[in-house]
Image (cartoon, rainbow, N blue to C red; front, side):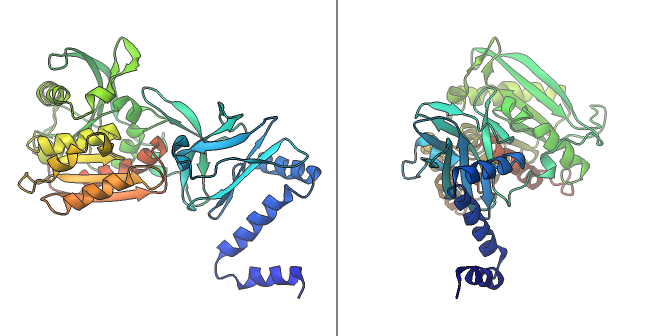
Length: 403
């Protein structure tokens, strides 16, 4: 039996499209090694069709073109260099300046990455149009690997044809508890009126600047879309900024969000009363929530379990429980008043282990909780994609009314 006939049988006999896709992937990668001319032709084809990185099924080939002594790829998939077991070094294709790294990820993964040239220079992928912003206090772009089964969620896309909420930005206040000034922004939903006989549910959000940013959390767009689709009731959201107002490069989140009693006092005794005086929001803890990611996820758990009389809802995204392991002891108390929790994590070098440990604790106490994970890393792409799940769980459009 000839090789060509055998390949034809494999195509027909494959029980899924995956077998065919893997064959096509292998054929495409091998074409780069056929000859320098064929490698150049294949490169141009993939560039023209915006298919670099080249991914089919669960297989992906990272590609880079340029003179270098070495080329590697780093990102969510290797913990940005902390996972030495992941083979991230590319190989130069003979007779060319092309470099290639072949690997595999879940077919619905979405991952941030950069190219490392000569061991020191970090680059955005020059032929990949997709980027995801990341980082503290404003962020910077990473290139974005979109595996074939991952698609942007419509709920995160701006829709000019629907009503939009309003945002009061950068409200400045002095905190006696902290001894310095803090800024925050407030989202009010379409149709909000302080004169209406409605006390809106309210959500307090740490890392508020990032959750607001259209290149990161993009949360106002998610809120507008969910309210328009009648998936959640209209809510008021308070976005707390950790950046020093007069020096935005100084982000105080690592101090403020590390189970900090003074920061908790600021939120509970200063910020909440001020918001409740200015806006018609619910005073019932069942309709007051706290949301955060990473260190903010740690803080959301801390606030909810230390002040369940104030926060009956806690959205915890990729929590940095490792930073303060005592959070597990605080949460492991079945006599606490019931709170509702929603936990999210990525499966790829994120916080899965800590989240699983926390869910085991929640199963033993008085909490109700939801949980969702995605094949992503510790990234704003991950957190943005899961914000709607948290909001729908806490504030469904058709549920008990607020006070």
